[in-house]
Length: 121
Image 1 (cartoon, one colour):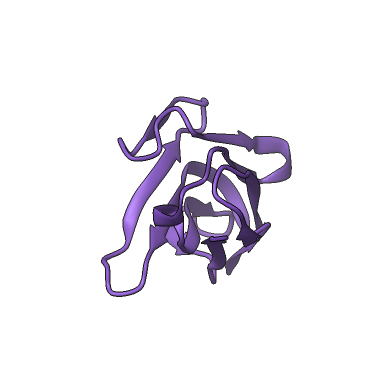
Image 2 (cartoon, rainbow, N blue to C red; image 1 turned 45 degrees about the vertical axis):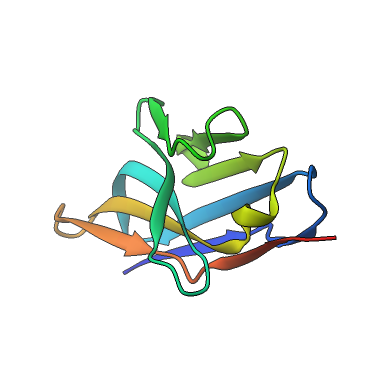
């Protein structure tokens, strides 16, 4: 089994910053792509940013230039630095990772439990 645990969410004023972290643990053989998604009330879950094992990143147009995704392969961790936050960034943020199980080397997608980000005065 593989677990993803997010941290770093909270309440921040518009224009502020937050840094989300997501740590993977369990029977990890290799972690391929990692990503952050978000889901606002009444909306579908959407991709925010993704990063390959080699460090190539891509972003949703709505966060380009404001958010930065990074990862530490040695720590099985992915980060999301969020700057210049806007009220429309308010959502539950979920970590996602494609993980090869060390017991079978079969790759599956795993999700964290989510962390709330609220941007408000």
